[in-house]
Image 1 (tube, rainbow, N blue to C red):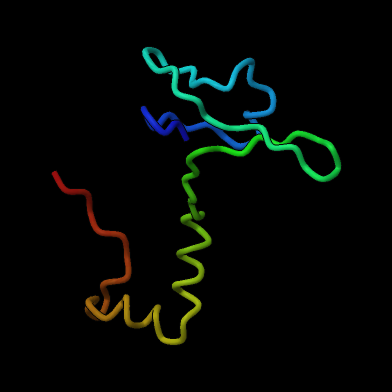
Image 2: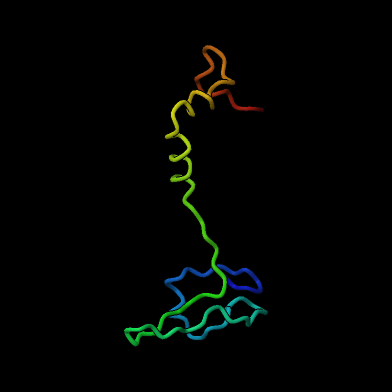
Length: 88
């Protein structure tokens, strides 16, 4: 993630980039620094990271709580389990 313009880059892209600068138009902010590891290899360490979680995984975790599905369905009425007609 670019610290200046918030352009997103996947961490796997960083080692293959031609320069450390952001490639977005009008931005030249540095994205990462190179860190020498104990194995004498270089690692790209980004200055800004945006952690994200999978929506499917978060929804699955929510629905695994006992009784959560029934709680989410509480607003429905009897016979209200079919898809609704389209709104015109």
